[in-house]
Image 1 (cartoon, helix red, strand yellow):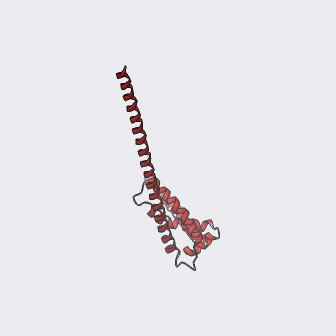
Image 2 (cartoon, rainbow, N blue to C red; image 1 turned 90 degrees about the horizontal axis):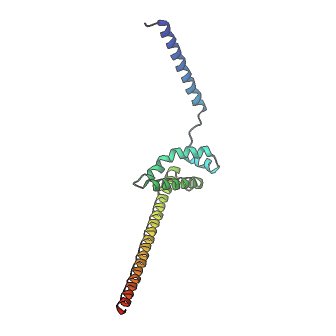
Image 3 (cartoon, rainbow, N blue to C red; image 1 turned 45 degrees about the horizontal axis):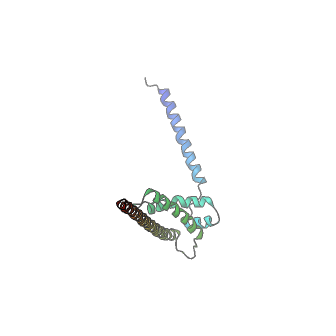
Length: 165
C-alpha cells in the first residue's frame, strides 16, 4: 500500500523543486533594479523613459481611481479618469524638483485641482445643455401655440363663410 521508494522519490523531487525555487529567487534579487524615488522617476520620464512612466502609473493608479469613484456616473468616471491620466503625464513631464518639495505632494495637489476644473467644466456643460433644452421646449411650445391659433382662425373663417351662405 505505502511504498518507501515512492516516498523517497517524492521527497527528492520536492527537495529539488525547493532548491530551484530558492535559486530563482536569489537570481531575481540580483537582477532587481534598485528602488528609485518618485523624483528620480519623474526626471527619467522627462527624458522619455517609458519604464519609469510605467512604474509611476502603477504607483499612482489608486490615487487616480480614488478621485474618479466618488458617486459619478460610470461614463463620466471613465472620462474623468482618462482626463486625469493625461494630466498626470503632463504634470510628470513638467515637474521641477527645485520648485516643488516632493513629487507625491505635487502630483496630488495638481490632480485634485484638475479634478475640480474638470467637474466645473462638466457642470457648465450640463447647465448649457439644460438651457438649450428649455429653449427648444419653449420654441416648440410657441410653434405649437401658433399652429393652434392658425388652425382656430381657419375654423372660425370656415364657420363664418358657411353661416353667410
